[in-house]
Length: 316
Image (cartoon, rainbow, N blue to C red):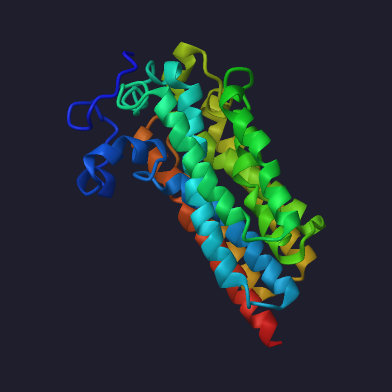
């Protein structure tokens, strides 16, 4: 890697997806938008959904919808910028490994579109925007949000030392399951931690599917993942993981006193997860990516059920 920025017109962008970044964004901004994965928003959605789940569930418990729309909007902005910051950090730490993997070698840093120093400055900018969002909440929520940074910083290194890096990813990506309660009640109760646990297991499941895209390359360069750990037994592992996720989230709904609309949302979520297991073929990378992305829809089904339940509970 030369370390010298290359213009977007000449740098290799084999991972280009033909979206708005590739077709409409100013050329100078494209490497930075790709660093933040704004061309691939699925990860931001998956980071956002536990935030929305917890905000809706907390609103139902409080029987107060007055702040739900604002909280969801702030979480939306925060999830996208902080996922961008996290991805940039991941690319900085993995810049040498990414050059050895077919799917990631054209990322902005290993392909020379930006330097590691430029990427770090961009990460700081995104983090400041995230901090501005976080400062809109109460002091307890601010402290809770800042606490997640330790896990986010540690995640990129876990794939080097354990076959379970997805657990650390789950700890980070599920943090929003705590935030909805923190911003609503300025405290964390048992229901928040049970929802958090359910979300963690869900993340381990869907990221295992995602990791099967890189399984051969990861094995060759010594990167560990649950995809390699489970191998041909992935469907069985997903049955356990997704089953546990539904059980834990259902326990959170029970502790929260959710009504029938919340349970319908959970049932739709569970059916979607079951569909993923049935469809999965770990040898088909395109299908793995499709099923991974479909978890946004699964999470939205649960969120819709929780919002409808919260509305109904405020009317009771």
